[in-house]
Length: 22
Image (cartoon, helix red, strand yellow):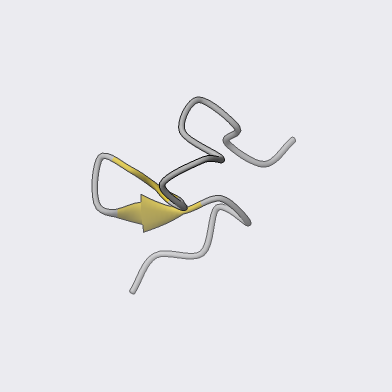
């Protein structure tokens, strides 16, 4: 499942809330 730890800021440890590594 996608990361949702920081949906308010849109990023979690360098990864977006969709879990895509950019």
